[in-house]
Amino acid sequence: MSESVIRCDVISAGVAEGSLCLFETLYLPTAGVEKHSGQKPEAEMNVFKEQLTSLVRDLGEAVDSLESEALSAEADVIRAHISMLQDPMFHARVQEAIGRLRFTAESAVEHVIEGVTRVLAESRDARLAERATDLKDLALQLRGKLARQQARSLPELLREIPDPVLAIPELLPSIVLHARRYGVKAFLMERGTALSHGAILAKAFALPALRVPTLEMLRISHGANVLVDADAGELLIEPDRGERKCRLQPVIEVSSPHAVHHLPVRLWVNIVTPTQLEGFDWRDIEGVGLYRTETRFMERTDDFPREEEEVGHYRHLFALCGDRPVTVRTVDLGADKTVPYMCFGPQDNPYLGLRGHRIYHFHPDLLITQLRAILRAAAGPHRLRLLYPMLETVDQWRLIQGLVEQAVASLRAENLPFQQQFEQGVLIETPAAVLSFQRLLGLIDFASVGTNDLVQYLFAVERNNANVAKLYQPEHPIVLQVLKNLADQAREAGKSLSVCGEIASDPELLMLLVGLGIDNLSVAPKEVSVLKARLTSLRIPACRELAHACLEAQTAAEVRAKLGIRPQSAIEATSTLVGRGQAVDPVCKMIVKIEENPYSLVDRDRRYYFCSRPCTLQFQRETDREGSP
Image (cartoon, rainbow, N blue to C red; front, side, top):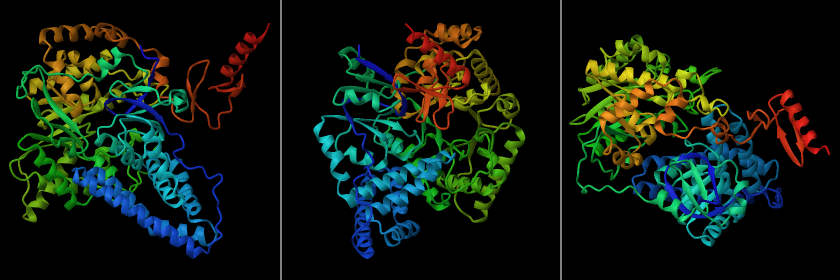
């Protein structure tokens, strides 16, 4: 067995092995750096402009390199960084810090960016908080140029360790680009999300990444052999031979290279960018089951995408797919998917606020522009399927159809070529959509089930909330009954139904989904080979028998027992979600905030945090009892 196994959050999937390279000093300390300049302000501004020009040139070369690899979406990330550096307001603030405060160029950059990032990082808007990370990245690079320190330290460290697995505070885009040149095998990070720009680049380069509870717990393992299993969400320190073989050995298909399997379900792929399909092996794959177009909006920092540039983007997608059906989900903004160039107004609970089609009531042009671009790009022999998210009722369907008619009419009026034959479907994500499904079936061509949100709304539980994560149970008999009913209704109506949420790629639930009558699964491209290997061994009668038994169960625990899944304790369910600035109450095991928490005490040189006064007192009584003779 491994010396230790650490449960982590997956940021970028994949499996890799290497030597742990701990780099905690990502941001240069300001202590010891001369803050005020002895030179004239003009001289400091010249230094700033010179190194800024050098950095913009470096980033431009990075853009060219990414474009040469057909990574256009990733190149857009770096273009956004260049735009930030060239912002006149940024230049003006640096000039003021140098001229009025007499700062050095290095300290002026630090001063200006620190002020902006502090405001952004404290924002409740997740996307604005991510922009703070982008600015930190630029500060890191600029200070490296100005101080001539940072550019040397990380490469030197990476050269010392073979096959490095880089552990850092945050996964910054510049670090991903830099580390890629030095053969980094995977990343471990303490902060950040799977939607950060650094994560987007890591995914594009197929570099596994995990978010670990703390970097401090890895200090004693610097230089040790580690295995990053970002498929299972686990970090193995000093794995043994058996674990290495089991986790690193690829799935081997025994069939010939050109064989087509007779699978019990139809497989589709989910994508966030067309570049995922470049060089993709389409064997046994029906087409694109879900293209999440909101990533195009979320990667931008200035304004909504323009129609002409979107036409080119979608044309690239259809060219990669040939005559296969392509399911394009219209933009699904709102909840945790916000953009810095749109204010969503007051929302105590964004998941119940402006999201998906609800935005179109205020901005119908948002959908009309996107539909025009998609329809124009799909002109010709392409097979387009439009999927509308978060639709719950027939009247909402009619709203969308009115906007589709406007988009089509405008294209006809302008005599522009566009795809006139296309299918339209809905994404079932709420209890209301489940109850409206029978009515919707008479209007739609197909449907998909977004189980990530559906399970969340069925149980009224936030899946990313550590204290209630154990209640998010996609294997619960209630969820299984909902899926069975949807599958039966779709089959009776002769309409296609697919599952495109995370459970579609869960190998432990695969046999159950087939048994429930789900005959279309849409998963990420990297999941395809594993799923195909498992599907070829399934037998429909056995799947149906298992599904029937699970539907008869009363609890999720009973279902897990029938599936042979190890039960997970409440502490296990929450411990992997403990974030920065949070702690576990040692008495009741609730996750609590550290900042402004009035309930804390120190015992044996360690500070503990609690949810309430009773827990604090109970802990104090127990520790006093242990310490008494």
